[in-house]
Length: 40
Image 1: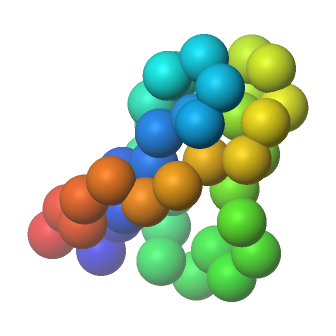
Image 2: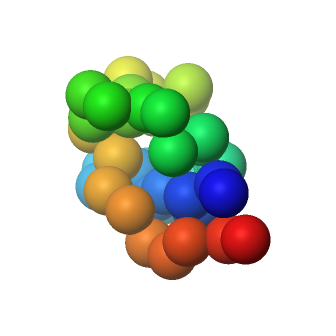
């Protein structure tokens, strides 16, 4: 299962695997990202 995450700063979105335990960081501005939705 993948989780769609969104950057709190610039709004960039990406998908990460659920094995990601620590908070994902944005590829563009390196701000923290939050979970938006789960994708099966």
